[in-house]
Amino acid sequence: QVQLQESGPGLVKPSETLSLTCTVSGGSVSGYSWTWIRQSPGKGLEWIGYIYYTGSTKYNPSLKSRVTISINTSKNQFSLNLSSVTAADTAVYYCAKIVVVAAPTRGHSYYYYMDVWGKGTTVTVSS
Amino acid sequence: DIQMTQSPSSLSASVGDRVTITCRASQTISNYLNWYQQKPGKAPKLLIYAASSLQGGVPSRFSGSASGTDFTLTISSLQPEDFASYYCQQSYDNTPFTFGPGTKVDIK
Image 1: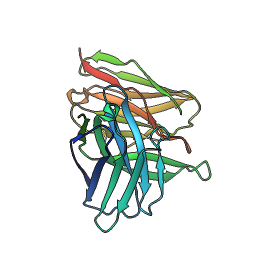
Image 2: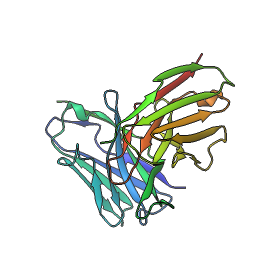
Image 3: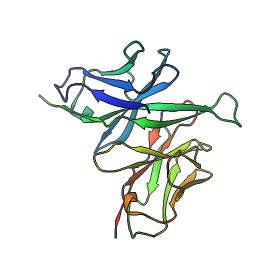
Image 4: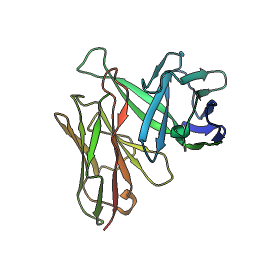
């Protein structure tokens, strides 16, 4: 079955860019949407954004100015860049696979839910 | 953004108890509501999607329902492995996904 693994630095300095990669195994990134979510004690679970395998993206407006999510289908990976980080960006970062299902009773509307998650990686922002 | 609230924030229960957790959305979200279980140090696990559809492999003691902007997760008979935190999450139309603050279920 599909498994996800986050990787990247566990410590990032303030004002720098946080960069994480999610490697997908047991399946292909093609045909699916993929997302980043973070969890901190102060803000709970926060959705960061998602990317479709074609490269189209959607971001949380609260982070949009600082976030870039990209995908590399040849490496079966997708990545997160979060710029100008502060201590408030300290969190456990999860990558996850999104299932997108058409809603049967509402045209052009879809259910989105995260059915496979990585184990998470802790990122601390500190000098 | 659509705000999600959950009640209670925590509860104590015994094995075999029926447990009900409520999630309320700040506006209508139809049935675009998912439930996740999270154990300490682990990633969330999908339990219920579209308010009442059971994810494959999840025990049938878990169920979900909806009434207007209120959603309920019920565990019919609490088992030792169910002690965890539970989160709701909405994915209504083009709004940003948002999660509830969570409900922690611990042993009485």
